[in-house]
Image (cartoon, rainbow, N blue to C red):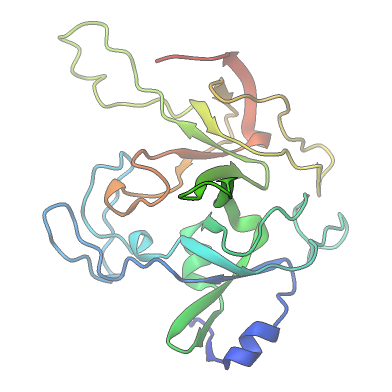
Length: 258
């Protein structure tokens, strides 16, 4: 697939208004010269795919090269949702992003999005509904010396980030369960506001979730990692499952501890 890439001026960039529920983001981080833990430079070999679902593989993969973490440059004034119009979003939600927020999106959208170049920098138009979460720097004490800030993280679009739940070994001889994780449950670690409604009225977001909940996923849910490999992760040193609220069936336990 040929990706549209266009050079624009700074005036055009600053006066441009994102349309169609898209967010204009600056490619601030890049994995182009990423290295494995052994120091090997990862290249763009799209003809070779190394499957790894446990986050331990340090081999290259096209998904690793996608800049899935970007910085918001400009947002649309509002989001468009109309159940009968396929050009709108698939669900109704509020615009929660702001300029300079760091967002995480999916590799497909990051790789195939419209790319603009301006004064040596790259910018991408990312569909708002393909953004899972964001980080934002906020003031704690603006008048202290030194001034104090902190970084907060929230999910949007009805997504939650879940910590993986490993299988419990029955004894020290149980080597088959070591390093295995459940794919039908997770521990909620980051969440946000549920979506108001979906295009199809029979779909609803699970309500009343709390941090620390052990939740059971729907059989339709295929959890995937926010970031594919630990070596290129920027959100956290831990790999989290991305799960839509609509695919959560049950809270198995509150304040769960592994």
